[in-house]
Image 1 (cartoon, rainbow, N blue to C red):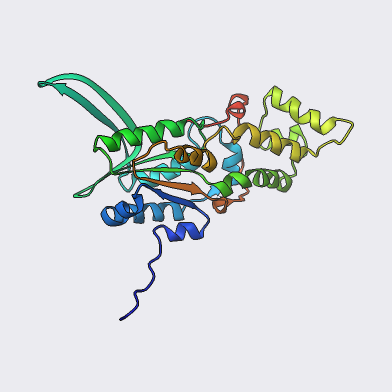
Image 2 (cartoon, one colour; image 1 turned 90 degrees about the vertical axis):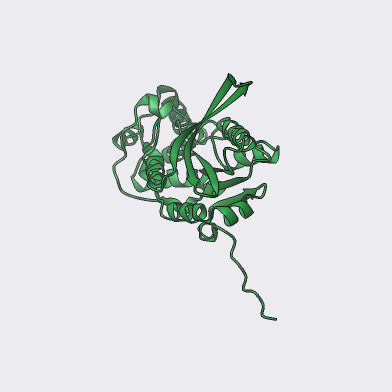
Length: 275
């Protein structure tokens, strides 16, 4: 009997690039069997994305250029924002209704609906919101699978090195040079940086003190990244909705020489984006 050739798992090209990929509650079999086009589209979009270091440094509150590009790429494939309206009637009389807004939703003819949220750098409780929404929508038969795309483990662990490299390559060794490169720390952040740099005992190089402060304030443990998402699903949040979870890897970072868009002090203090 001829031996069957091994079949690569779905999204293998993303795994090869370092993406975290996790299927839960039969999501793999559902997507492969009913929504193969969705897997192809996701793989195509995510394989092409890049994250310039200038955008990591220069992104303030609101949508970053990176997430805007990702959302536009999905929108061109008809992954559009949608508000699900779920109503209850008793003897034909409407009694109550709820709505659930999801940023990217696509309906596949004769298959069903797939919903997706992107959590690049938000407060980590947003995972609870997304997962509970997916759970409710799945229970109502509104969606077949929920997808979350977020910062992956390797990206989270590499942010400090990337930020420090940015400072080293641009010769940033003072508050003045930091400001020249478009980054304006808040008075509190400035004081914390200089306190470590100027202390008599064991002073810290400016680039190190700034990288510590920047990453801690902007991409800290209370923001959306892979380990925080894992904590939720390990506790069963979102279960039994079939889920596909994708973590963006460090390999998408590119070290460009572009000018950083200046950050206001308010943006510099904003530890997450509304995404």
